[in-house]
Amino acid sequence: MAGQHTEFDLETQAIRAGQQRTPEGEHSDAIFPTSSFVFDSAAQAAARFAHQEDGNIYSRFTNPTVRTFEQRLAAIEGGERCVAFASGMAAILALAMGLLEQGAHVVCSRSLFGTSILLFQNIMGKFGVETTFVDMTDLDTWEQAIRPETRFLYLETPSNPLTDLSDISALAKMAHTNDCLLVVDNVYCTPVLQQPLALGADLVVHSATKYIDGQGRCVGGAIVGSEQLLNESIYPFLRTAGPTMSPFNAWVFLTGLETLAVRMQAHCNNAMKLAEWLEAHPQVKRVYYPGLKSHPQYELGQTQQTGSGGVLSFDVKGGQSKAWEIIDNTQMLSITANLGDVKTTITHPATTTHGRLTDEERQQAGISDGLVRISVGLEKIEDIKRDLERGLDAA
View 1 (cartoon, helix red, strand yellow):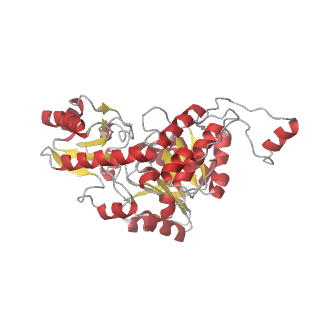
View 2: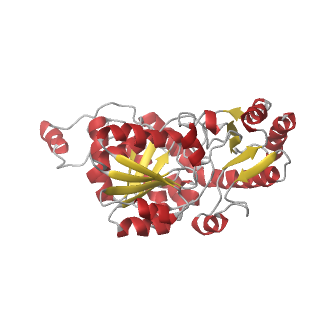
View 3: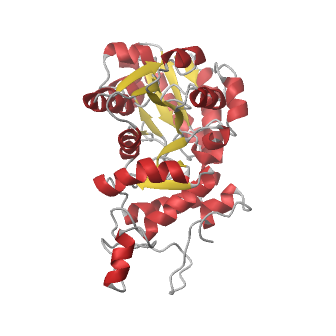
């Protein structure tokens, strides 16, 4: 079942799409750990380098295992093409380097992963690219920030770590009216819970490190979109600069995609139960989770997503010292900044994922000192509650 077969549902595509069996007849996806490929003749080598013939050349930009992963992710995300990268941040860098030039402008949600903010603000700023950060939930601020030189609008929805939501369809219409693109980081939902391209977005960015892997084994990233946009702007950067996904990592991500749908449903179920439990806890000031009716964009989440995801955050009474005390008194939860793992992870965003931002930037992004983020895993929910309650009781 090579390539995309749209007559199959997402769950089937996540298992079957893109596979091309070798003459050995393997049932599982093959892995091709090779740096280069052999040509039948000098003429064939010349034809491939000149783009006159399709085929493998060098694993920096053509590898069968990576290609299978790209085709499978494109199929379930509903895109024409996917380009894979060594990390999620490498994908975002490729997006910026491929689409922007000196004097270009980008409008970004203020509620981004901290490193994403620094990439646009500090690194791309060195190349004469200006970024305006806006409140992701206020459509008027997006509209007001767009300029003639704006190339794209960029956001995560749900956001990290406050799970704010943006109206993808409305932003897509706004972007296209102003002759620019909409790029959505879909790491929290994955294509199982949200399909930004179907809602009008032009490109979707993934950190495959998170839910696509699902077990915290490998680092990788990807961009999905139209064949034209990927071929003209993104793939050339990969080919030349080489932020390449390894065949082994691609193979791991392929196995992750096979169980993505069932895992995301289980993550959603556990997260919803934990969010409701935390909302009723006396030590908790507020819980941020799109599945709760108290969430300010609850109605949008019910229409834009098919599930509320596996990540939640909560503000604890007592600020940083109490947040740290809660984290340190857990015994089972993993204290790590990664997310999307079958193991529940817990972190303090203000001093980890968003620690390199200034106090003012954290305040603008709503990252308080008492905020704790949990990526809810697939352990028994009663065990997760019991371990977290140990930390809450200590506080």
